[in-house]
Amino acid sequence: MLTVKILGSGCANCKKLEAVAREAATASQVEAEFLKVTDMQQIMAYDLLSTPGLVVNEKLVSSGRIPTVAEVQKWLSA
Image (cartoon, rainbow, N blue to C red):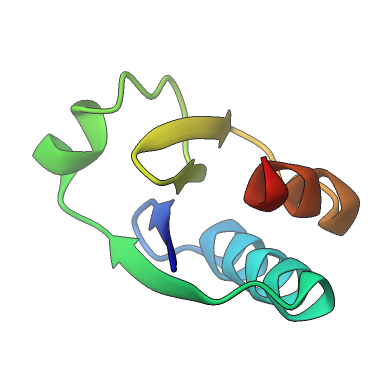
């Protein structure tokens, strides 16, 4: 099972990113655990320049934007 982390303060973009990531996991039939990280010290540990951020299995794959479902599916299957 993959671990997917949504990094951010809980803003509208963070929620949209989580929705896109969940949709990608469902479409790919990938089992994933979704975690929201709102603590700034934990977020900065990922060398994130701007939120929202997406981390798949401890690897930062996206920051500062909302990726497409297709992009997230690629990262989940990699």
